[in-house]
Image (cartoon, rainbow, N blue to C red; front, side):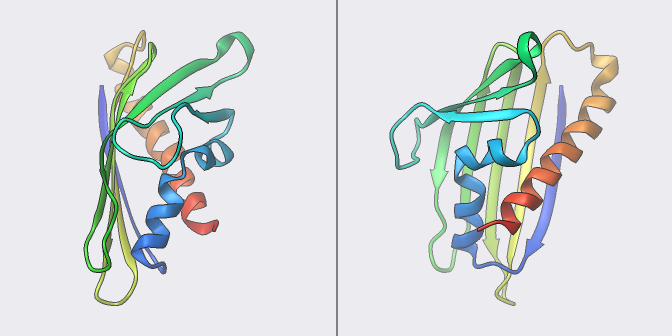
Length: 146
């Protein structure tokens, strides 16, 4: 199991950063070899379920996630979201927080715990480095694209 976090400060309003990070289907556009399907009707709320299918052919797996905390930002306050990972291969959680800054920009905090079944714990440092890189690039792309 690995725990990591990413922090970004972006020149976006807090509600725009929130929207960009929590449109789940867009995650498939920015994570290599991944397709995301939202299984519940909009809008996103606690109980929303989606699946990220990653890999190629027989080496693919589903990362099933459920939104278990959904607190969109208000004009002056932070937004917080928690996803619980409930797949057969990937377990854990992810938390996304967007917080307005006094300078009009937004602080983004993305925390994640990953437990990849069948991957021995001595490979945790490699999993952490890879996850930080993949999710960091994904967050950057999501935040850059309207």
